[in-house]
Image (cartoon, rainbow, N blue to C red; front, top):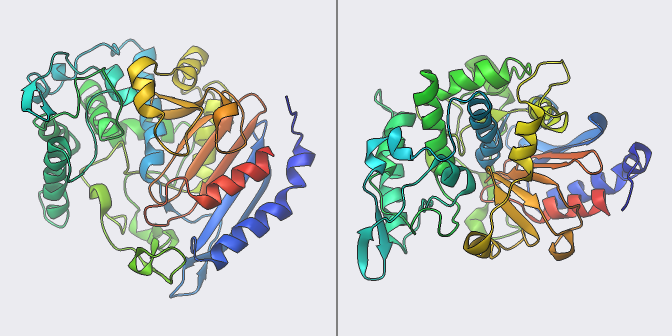
Length: 399
């Protein structure tokens, strides 16, 4: 086992700076912020590139990023708050909260058939629900696409789709498979956000503010960006014509019904809707690394809850379906996180027990409890996920 000291990690800063700069030159991204922590202490932070190319605004430490799917880890923590307080049971059927999930249909090559199992909260946390994202090949993906199309079409109106309305509509969509029998990445975290609303009798944003953001002093995190902070929101970019390495042009869409400019949105997406800064998200990751207690002493989760959230995994047919996710060899999935189970099979250098997730625009979290390392990478590049830059950063840090 390699024992990384803070000094050894600090010595890698030059390599990491060169790596980020090279990726910016090659139009892999417009700009990025990178932070590495050891034992919850900052080893180094640096940023490079532009928050807005057209206005020549450099990246700064207080820039606000669209987290997209890195929102899921925070949603998982919100569900864990309810779980540890006995307010939900992971085997509660989703239909208990949203009636449209009571009589679901599964799409097969022979048509729609009745689902044999009730979808549970546990299925949502593990992405074994049968729900997916938009695609044009399956009835489930087409149905889900129609819900998103309606939600996006209503964003600029005075009757935006709400979090709970979204969930109720998704309950009428066909499933990719019978709940619990396989694995597929999809809208499960959005349904969890709606369940949190039902149980807590407050909006998902209010629940997060009361139970996570305020206790951890995450002042720049939420489902929208206040007007006075809009100047700190980075511009998202994509390669012209979606050609790798081509000129970067602003991305102006509202993917997954997230308002690109950070305006208020009644659809508080647990899967994709959070905006945050690198320092705010650091406070959240440190809470997890400290067994549920923030650096300021605030207790958000109990130790056993954090251990359950970050060590759990799927197995059998579920794991078999997940293992085809290129880039996540050696991992399992549970509680809206990837978890490294066998680093010998992975495509990047890493450590068993590390966990986290990334976002559609390239935000990235990795907590590695075995050696006390946290990596936070913030960028906003269209359709990036865990891309080349992320993998290169990992290899340098853990190499």
